[in-house]
Length: 113
Length: 109
Image 1 (cartoon, rainbow over the protein chains, first blue to last red):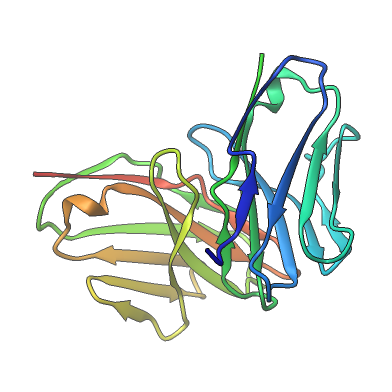
Image 2 (image 1 turned 90 degrees about the vertical axis):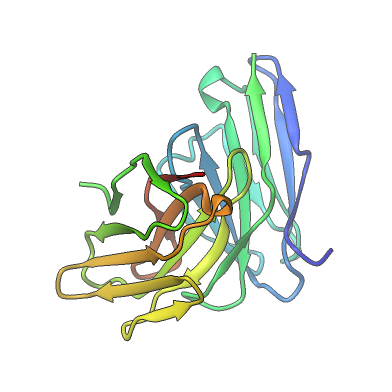
């Protein structure tokens, strides 16, 4: 499978715990995006990488959120001290060209209890 | 005002009907436009890009009106399998994909 893959698919965690998600983009894509989606809403932009450089961060990305893409390939999104409001689907996408089509992974569904 | 706005619906149409969705965007410097389809609890999947000249893919036609800042999606001869949420996506400048909230379509037998 050469699409975008995310791991894990589901995560249930207790409030206050830290969680980390992984995204493996399509191999020739140098652009990688993280989005968050809650029920009934469209995906909301969190952050964007071009190769290993994090070029944009949303105001939604509080200090508890951090993302990395150390070698310009896979990326991780960490949420520290999770809160119930963090419960959402976290989507990763990649694209090859600026302004080009983005392809999404299946997402990681986070539930904070 | 949101960057991208869509009528959330729901649109309930009989099989075989023609249905159209519109989406408006706020930034006149917008560069790229797409329609994505999202099934329940699944990831968004690219349906089609939207070009200034308009484009068609089978039963689907997308159009862009830069003067009025909206894009549209027309689905002809609706199938049951077309039932999904349709997301309008706009890239302004830079790299962010801005999504609308989606329009829900249910095609009824």
